[in-house]
Amino acid sequence: MEYIQLKERKDIFRLGFKDTEGNIIYDKDGKEVCIEFDLGDIDLPIKYNKCVTQINDARRELKNKFIIINKQKDRKGKGFLSHNEEEKTKVIKEFYKKMESSMDLFLGQGGTQKFLNGKKIYWEVWDDISEALKPHMDKLHLTVEDMENRIKNKYSLKEEKEVLKDV
Image (cartoon, rainbow, N blue to C red; front, side):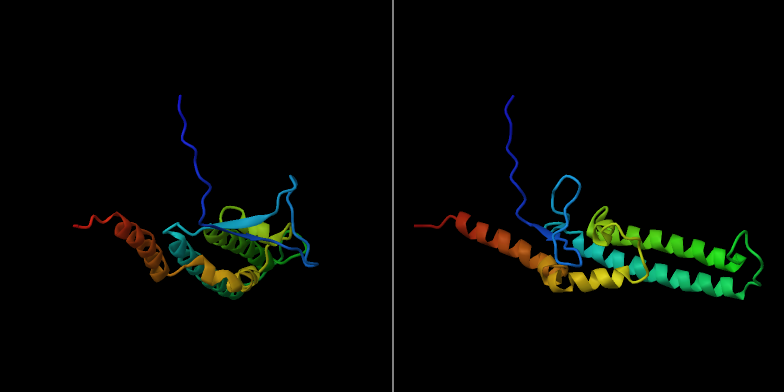
């Protein structure tokens, strides 16, 4: 049997993580923990847009559920918390699951957990991730114009080289 050797992708943008003291974070196998963005993925801007939309929707839904819970008459719960406090806790846990799922759409599966580095998810995590990514957003080329330019640059040069000229 003959084989085709696959090339390493050139258009993968990797972002590693450092802890609060500036030390590079490694996984249990000794590899640097990072998230990867496939810059050739035409869906990357769509994934980002969907991520932002889903997070905003989840926040709006959480606020609406809180309003509903707050309008209910409170009563004794099963333990230390009142019934309404228990309901709010359930709603927040559900919100965090939705938020992590939404962020992983853009960051890649497990990307949110890599960012959290073993910590529990929290309300401002999306804002913190957005702030951390801000200096790198231009490199991600998330606009349709960026994608069009990438395609034009790749194929316009190739066409010019292959054009036959009359002598």
